[in-house]
Length: 454
Image (cartoon, rainbow, N blue to C red; front, side):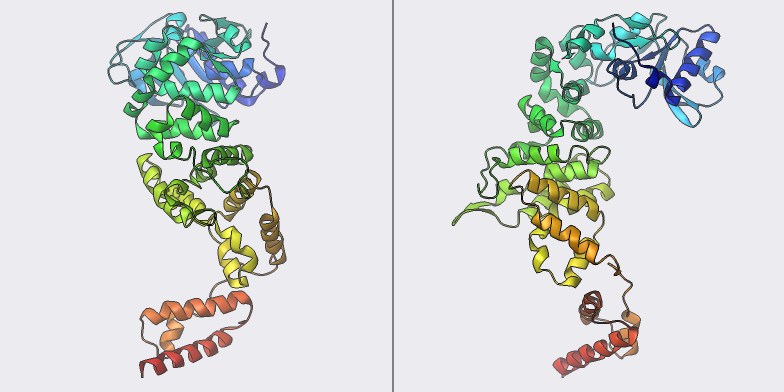
């Protein structure tokens, strides 16, 4: 018998969800905590959210609670807000025909909680909980599948996957997250319908992919996506990493695909809730197949820049925001610069460590090393150097600007940027302390420019 632990049921979110169920019942409506929250409670995990299922219709839910918000009213879904926390409250329903492989063409409300469960995806997500008695209602043997660590569709897998193609990715996500096996018939149908994933919107695919690679077993998750034929339909560039050999003295672990998955595994705790780092790791060597050369040894010249361009295209395809796309691209384009940190001038080093999200770049570099040769000397050097510079401003305000150059008689032009950059480098090196120092150096540069013109 699976028991719900007292520590979890004393959680404030559980109590808030319970209060919603209580209020619905006080108004003569059946109501339960349902789905993933019940699954997680049975696994002694803390749920991220609590969903509630009820026979109350959306308009009745609105009347009962002070703060509500319709989010899928046509499908019987409302948000009820308690103590500034939102809870999804859905009306028991039967789904009718699915025309687009994602949404039912019509929804029929029902008074039967069992009918509501029968339309859901997997048995482990088809559990209902009475928060008062902690009794679990199981209409599809979900508890047995939890005990045997099995992912199985509710009912016919062909129908379940045909109704909603996103369930193909969800099956892999749950199997990967909980280290469960996928039941044989469910697995067979998943492989058969894998090509149908392209009918799902890029945004929804990105959301599921993000959940796979920002959770435990992220590297294994990428392996599963490949073995079930999903990568070739979502990110075919990842499949091209397979079989691309690397110099064994730097990469004894294997080909680029194996290395990429290992990097994700090394970042397991770091990528939780950090999709930017996860996708940076997934794409960091994506330029290697097209830059492969073998002369004195295997090389991938400028693969980071080729990879950044490829990453840009993939991010657009998956509908990332411009901000996140740029952050992911930066992780890809900058990851090889750590190889030069010991030879960098102070100014160059300061510019490098002052790039946005440098902490993510540092984490990726460490994982990159641990997933290959294991040598952390460049990582340690960088961390120690940052500590040495901790009393110095890493990115100070420039001591002179364009207006200062104009005041010295230089007309705006291409020389401006070059002169200001050289002076800022000297400032970062610690050779210039005051504005007067900067102005003096600027005068000498301007004199050189005028002499070249004359």
